[in-house]
Length: 121
Image 1 (cartoon, rainbow, N blue to C red):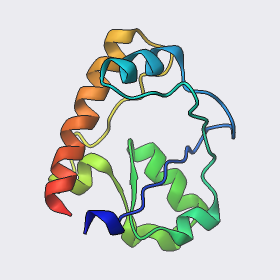
Image 2 (cartoon, rainbow, N blue to C red):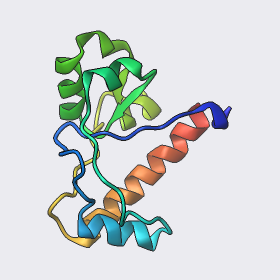
Image 3 (cartoon, rainbow, N blue to C red):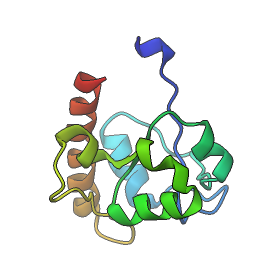
Image 4 (tube, rainbow, N blue to C red):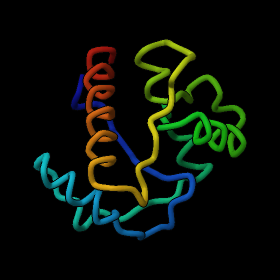
């Protein structure tokens, strides 16, 4: 059931308390979400162990999770890998530091993958 799903976001290179980038805030606002008060959280070993499923944006992020907690291998995937069951083209590029248009394309891709994820779970 959807009300039994708990979602947590954490970064492999995030600094605790870091605000969202201006372009992320702008694109989220266009989509009806408010990131003004959002603050980043660093991924920890404890958070990895607590999770039933870990979805990353890139293979590099996935590798960082597995270096931190090798026993998380059976529950760690890139988002695209998990929903498409493909081993090709499984990264969602990080738009950090790029134009607002790149952020929009990234948001479109994430939204598409999250729709597939909801169908899957």
